[in-house]
Every structure is written in C-alpha cells, then in structure tokens.
Image (cartoon, rainbow, N blue to C red; front, side, top):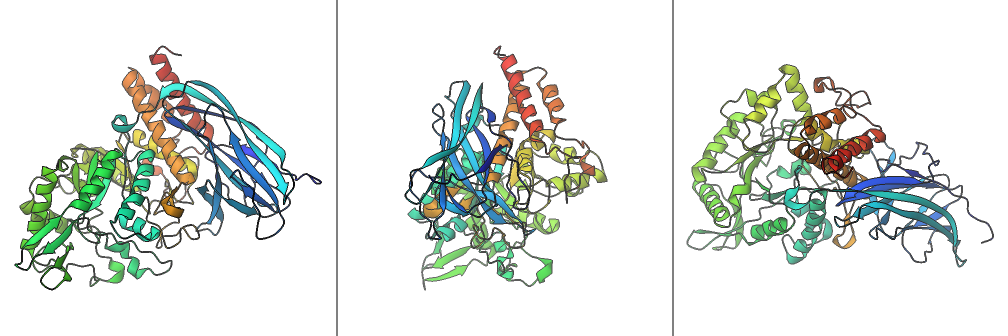
Length: 590
C-alpha cells in the first residue's frame, strides 16, 4: 500500500454510546472485560480518520458505489470464545437533533465521513459450559483501496475473565421481566399475513430474542384493538400503525350460534412456552385500557360500541349468513364469549398463569363496573393493575394479583405519605414490578437515555425490593425505524428495544444489551441473598454505590445527574465484582 491510512481508534466501556458532536477518547488501547458463565462480555471501539473510508464487518471484498475509498475491514479473533461478534453501531437522529448510536448491524458496510467517528460494538456470548479463566483476543483492522492487498493497520487486544459463577436460565431466573408483545406490528413491518405460517416464523425470531433478554411473560390479545391503536389515527406525522387484533377467530352460523377458534391463541402460547415466556400470560381486550383521550373529545370512534355492556371492548366475528364481518354489541353475546374463552383456558391448562390486564384504566368506577360484568361471565380470573400507590390506597375494594406502578408515581405517592407503596404492594397477591413507559424521562431506555440507565433497571428492582420490571413495548416500530425512530409523539426509541431486520432477523440495539446487563446484576444479587447469611447486607451496601440519593421523592424525573444515581461505569462493575466475590467465598472458591 503506497499511503498507509491513518486511523484513530480506542476502546470504550460497553455503556458507551457515540454521539456526533461529542469528542470521544481514543486513548485506551487494551480492553479488560469480566463476566460470568451463561453471560456475555461486551465493549465498544471508536474509529476515526481524516479521510473518507468504508467500514466493513464482513470477511469479504467491498467496493463503494460512491467512489474510490479505502476500506477498513474489522474482524474479531478470540479462539477460546468462538461466538464473539462485531457490530456496526448505526447512528439515529434523536429528539435533540443529535445523531446517536443504537442499532447494531452485524453485516454490511457504511461510508464514514472525514473526521466523523464510528462505533463498533463487540459482543461475546459466554455459554454456561465455558471453563472459568482468562481468554485473550483482539479486534483487527485491515485496510485496502480497490484491488490492493489488505494491510493490517491496527490490532487492539482484549481479555475476558470468566468467573466461576453461572447466571441462571429458564425457570431458575428470578428477575420477573415483562415486556408486552405486539404481534400485528411484526406482521405489518415484514409483509406477512396476520397469524399466517410466515407470521409465526417471524414471531419465533422475536420471541427468541425477547426470551434471551429475560422476558418471562406472554402478551395475548383476546379482543380487537385493546389500546385503540394508541390513537395512531390521530397522529399522522410520523405515521405509525399500532393496532392489535384478536387471536381468537369468531364466527356466527346461519342459525345465530357463535363458534370460537382458539388455534392461533394456542399456537402463540405454545411458542411462548417453548421460550420460557408463560410464567404469566397477560390477557388484553377484555377490559378497558385508556380508550378515550380528553384531548380529542369523548366522541371518538373507540368509545363503547355495545348496546348494553358497560365496557368498550370490541369483538369482531364473521356472520356466515351473509359473509360480513361484524362486531358483538349485546352483553349476552360478549359474556358468552368470555365464559367460553375462560373455559378453554382452564381446559388447556393456561388459566393459572393468566392475568386480565387493564392498562391505566381512566375511570376507576367504570373499571369496577367492567370487572363486575366480567366476573359474571368468568368469576375466577386474576388481574394486573398499574395505577399509582396513592390511588390504590384510596380504593380499598380493589383486588389485584400483579401490581406495576410507574416509578415516578412511586415517588409522588411516597411524597404524599411515606410507606404508601409498600402498603399497596402488600395488597398484591403476586408479583410487584416497577415500570416505565413514555414517562418518566429518566431513568428510561429511550435513545436519549444514557445506557447506564438501562443497566440500572435491574438494580432498581432490588433497591425497591420488587420482583422485576415491566415495560410496554418491544417492537412497536414507526413506519421506518431505521430512518426515524420516533413513534407517535413519544421520545425516540420509547416504543421498541430492537429493530426489524431483513428477512425477519432481529437487529439488536445498544439499549437491549444495557438492559440485559442490569438484569444479570439483579440475578447475582438474588444469588448472594440466597447463599450468604449476610447477603442482604452485602447487596444493600453495594447498592449505595449506585443510588446516591436514597430518597426517591427527591429524584428529578426530567433530567438526571450523578447526584441521584451513578453514571460511572466503574461503580456498576464494582457492584458486580462484590456479588461475584461473595458467591465465590460462600462456595469456598475465593
């Protein structure tokens, strides 16, 4: 090569996110990573040059249609950990008009402009059977222009220390992660007929990756458009289609009798069970969510369409007498459907895991009336509720089996009266999870959120003494999330944690792996508490490194800084190291 290309490159912690306009550091030339078995190691690299170049993460030749540019091919070598992979971190426009890295592409190339940095993400799966010890590897950068021979221009070494502790999997997982699923959105984005064989092929891929994240619950729609499409019909810019549809197919024969086909519902539940995602089954469409929006008036098309049923649920059927699709409007028909559905769930062995879910019911008196009507048809169902502890306290008649308050509502309730959250949780018969949605702004998993906020989600559950975390969406993409990740008018990235890839492949994000890391932290904490008599004290002391403002009522949910929780990666690594040391000592391996 006549003119050797000059590259600036350096390692970054896995919590690093490239933001154009913020100068990265290129000083770190060797990376040391540490993880458990049944875990993963990760880190990032930043690269920059004074000249335009093509960045490639495949082992092949590459020519740019934009011109005669040097090609920098990146590859990872780690003989002891053969699953190591490199991803290009794609840049996305955020709400503040800054470009930030998120989607992780393990294929193809991109043109990197002069002086603009690029980010590579190194992900190394460490299976449960991996031998403990230290593994060495390197990321190599080769350069060539057109038909020149490649030249090795950089080799950035790394080590992975695998501790003799294995994270749990399957039913042994303690963290109760619930992320709602939206199958219809997957079908739309990949061009598949709803609930067809092709759709289920796609669903398996997204179910697999959601399970790998740690999700333990299935979300099924047993009524049509339970969230009213999130009012996407009122929000045309950016365009989004967020309508979900009943998994039960209903027909009425010529004599007027209704028949129910549960084959789609059964197929989806069996898919979720194969991936350990039926610890709980959330039923949507049987009771009101937030179905009206005062900003649009009360006469919206998603209000109650029934003649004598107290709740605006929608159940479409095919009338075989004329072939027309129609909607149930009589209470007797709706109750018969509900009774038949619950009989089927009981017969097939699903009922014990089922929860009738109401997403932020807007009117608690109406909610109670709807519950009463539902219990007339099916008296023995369980419920999930996500209203504030303060409102729970004012409603002694409410009974619920899963409780998921938003973290900002916890703070407001505790400011009103200390202990309200614990009092509300004590009334819950099952799991208690903290949650976020499009609010609060921090801590969260938006594109704007520092990646350590994603990692914080696991420790927050332990800090609050809760069972896990609930979030509303995994795949609620806008029209073209790779180009514009803003769904409706929510913060960019709010509605999804992964991206739709070509052929139905899941495209991971930096946010996905940050959340997964925090879940692993939580699992280690539960192991320490189970195996050490002083485990609770060890965990609580370690958490002080992360939670600098122990009074949640003083948290700022609009803008976080390091006075309320840590943004120092070293603190998170120290917490994890303490958990591992405590376990090794308990097992006589220290």
